[in-house]
Image (cartoon, rainbow, N blue to C red; front, side, top):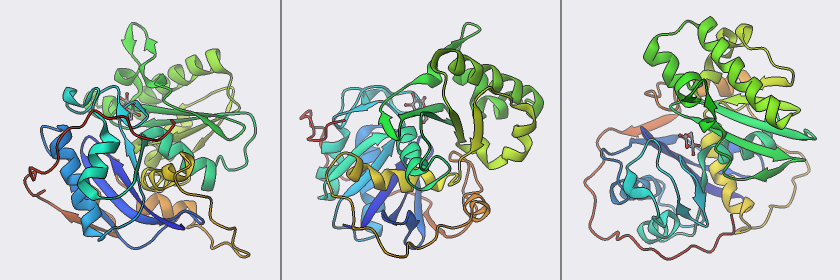
Length: 307
Ligand code: BGC
């Protein structure tokens, strides 16, 4: 099974594309639909199903989700409707799409993409991916193996949730200069460093698209690199979730692996923030999601994945 549909489920947009999980390449255009408001399970799951239907998808689907996900069940709800808490998202999406689904935390998905195809590929020791977007997502790897659901974006810094000081949304909201934002990000990364001593930080999310502006103001003991795959990491990493959870087997290695787009190309392809309006092709977008169909019902059964 070399091609899997990856869907990056966010608080603002739900976007997907088939991905060749052997090469990390997206096949064709991304398709994006705005996240319905309120972002309830039924409305969001119907939107995910519309993304799958756009590709006439019949096969495994991997989804990244902006919350803690254990065995397919959503455990937290930061930037989505609170009614998600305790909902079996995996079972709901399977019921709506008729496809087997692997559901993982969105930052874990992005981290999987960087470990498999990006700047963290082959890196030994402890790697921490930090996505600076609407929230702060983290993915921690030891010798390439994921420790799932680290919620290090919620460390308390100066009495506040770190997201409120170092997420890209905080920079936009307060109209901070890159210097001021860089100071906050540095303080946050230094706190992670003090506690976990990583060998490499990988910075992803919206802020990584403007790495040239942020980088001069960020200084850490550990090496720090911008994510290679920028926002496509969310989709590519989501597509890796079924592999990660053992739902599909690893494809046979190709003799001559197709080359991944250059980092610059990936950056410009994904030039917009995860939570901003994507402007760059290839992507098609359905502006107005269709109203939720009644056939999805919340089920509380636990999914079969092991994360
Ligand atoms: C959530 C994380 C998520 C991150 C990025 C945080 O608010 O708690 O689970 O990975 O946002 O979406």
